Length: 358
Image (cartoon, rainbow, N blue to C red; front, side, top):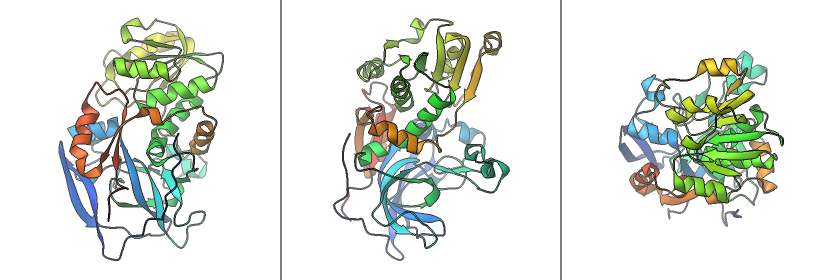
């Protein structure tokens, strides 16, 4: 865990300033463009972006396979990026609780705050929500500056560095999965996936005292899972049937989604976290019925940030070991090439927006 407090507060955008932003114009068509820098508007802060994390959702936008594109929920061109950290440089007059110079990260789930679900405190069920850089028209954060709703921001303690903070968004989803499936110290847990979601889920379940196995197809990923505390690592072929009290599918792989129910014990709980971008054939729905299983679809972790930071502060989760490489944002094509390589020893690839001289 790194300590990272900026020596000086980054400046806010100048009036009329153009800034670099990374746009997905089509499949495998990444463009660095100069676009108008944002100004703070009501309810928002302008953030000088430091790091942006790349994940499987970004990869599926990059190669054109995303189900968001296929179902018309997102359209090219758009500024991508939804895992990030940075520093507040401008605060709208109506915003309280943030000041220029605050180090922050944030989720990307922008709710309407007016529907019945939002009013009942169930923000994650908001049917009118946008997801910055993923769903709807809200732009992503792969730019020098981003205008971000203050309600999505979380202040960062000095003990969490900027690169690690860019992993908080997927980590909060992992914590939501562990909470929703009710993981406890008497449980045996299986996590499918050795990406960021899977490895953080494993650590969070271990922090609750559960016995946790990790299943994956990448040897490097399984080795990393073992070094981070997994009680056992398995290939999919080695996974036993009817074995685990809790199974959490965190890879988004079609094959893992189809296999996960068979590993579940009778009366077990299944958490589906990874998003398959293709249909899942041969999903054993009948098996879930016969096992009297409980199934949870897990979207986002917008209400879990404070809990997550608390767990990290107690040493329950290590994020730095998950970072494979940090690329300057101008080398974004290399970053996506690296993201697509199956032999990465660590899952997370980051873009650095903060170190370039202005």
